[in-house]
Length: 373
Image 1 (cartoon, rainbow, N blue to C red):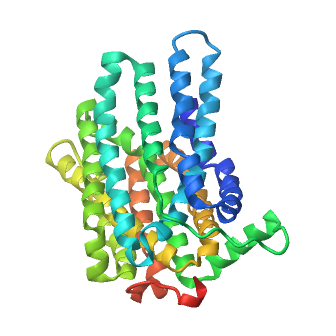
Image 2 (tube, rainbow, N blue to C red):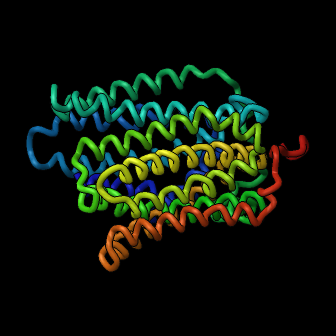
Image 3 (cartoon, one colour):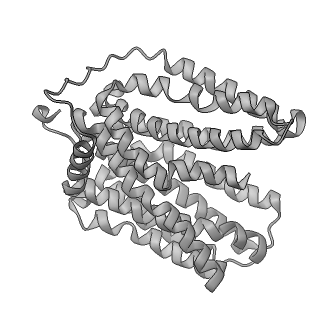
């Protein structure tokens, strides 16, 4: 199981995933996003896993197939993530990006809460392979619904000469990293992700060993984080309208991330409950930030560069994920779980600085001139 998870992380977050981000930017910008969203997502991500799940009980060779499915799943996830973010401005219009991203985050939060709650009893009732098949059927139905989207998107203009992948990668990096607002949001996201993974690498160890929590209590902590994410999705649009998109981006981590320090300071008893509330606040602030940040990035990017901007943002922000895991493990071994949580909490709090020290601080609503669309 652990190696399967590592394969997926390798493909979607590690070196292979970083390379795929740039390959994806070429594919997304040269194709129609609806095709990628409906044709490369749900069915192709999970139906192979379902077919494999039927065969898992017999033979040892199936585990190699599971590794391959995990790798393909993570690979196609990169295509999906870049394609749907590139397609959203065409689907809802640039004037409704905050609402569109907030609704997507709300759906994601609901599934993150309900999915594990349903999966556990279902595995105990019918077994893991049948549960995997049922999950695949549900995802196939999701893909079928996505394929019914009828919003037309203008096909990208054919270039005079066939573009080189290297040149397109360079153009995407140049646009995203030279734009002061985009650069600040991407760098802040990278610092937050690195610190978050570092924090999470020792969180479960601390909960079990230092606080003495059992599986049920640990599950409640993580369920609280899911509820915080859902609340954040429901409030994100209202907060962005009230404070402005720029202020929502830098204020969310500044206000909520310091509360994660309650966890390493906690001891068995009531302080553990306060620490769990701090983690729920982290999830709430994270969703508010991501909704506002994604909306700003989409609004400031011309249609022809949406795929490349999205891929570049993921290339930079995901680069810190493997490093955060390694640093978390090293710090946990050297200084202990509590010290690692303190380091992660400080890093997440400081992630507001790149956006605060940039034009994002005073940005109310992001938009492009009509001539740049």
